[in-house]
Image (tube, rainbow, N blue to C red; front, side):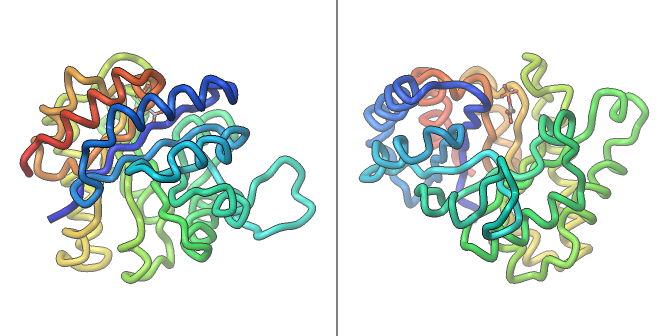
Length: 257
Ligand code: PEP
């Protein structure tokens, strides 16, 4: 059985004071949940990682960063290394988010380098894949998933594949309020699992957690999670308020898989 994983991507929001307040609120709301049954992850901006790490240190909430560079250290002005991210208290890191692919020239090649670096330094990567609206409308969804998965995961062996979480995030559903239907999410996520089965083997593919991301809200999380290949969610906008994110996590913890 795959353990449900709900992650909040705080994107470029929250000052230090606001981030501490949000983390404290989540800790208060979510402490009753069993960390053996659900992974709860929050991914704030780099500038507040240490402060948030302190707040959630003795809680069932884990910390993730939103990006990482692939070098350990060096003259790479503006970049943050996996070692620094770990040092700040992170266990997870989001890699290849569509906003990075869209605005910051992220490619499958850079995703692949970041992925390998994250694994090397003991971080759990959340690798984002997914098609744009025009790609979907032109019946290219599966082609894009092939490209993102096969090239993003290039040379990742089976042992390391098991350390990865995949987030299926159709770009047209991110921040738009337009959620994929549960059927659309399941179709794509099942496709990803079958693809992983062909690249590795079915047994391993069946162990990989695949999250759905794209306008997840308390109102749609249960329906999405009921799908067999939806193992969690990557939540953007709705992770910025205690009430909505806590509601999503609580509802997720009650879905029987
Ligand atoms: C995201 O940032 O990964 C995301 C899915 O955003 P939203 O939930 O706001 O669509």
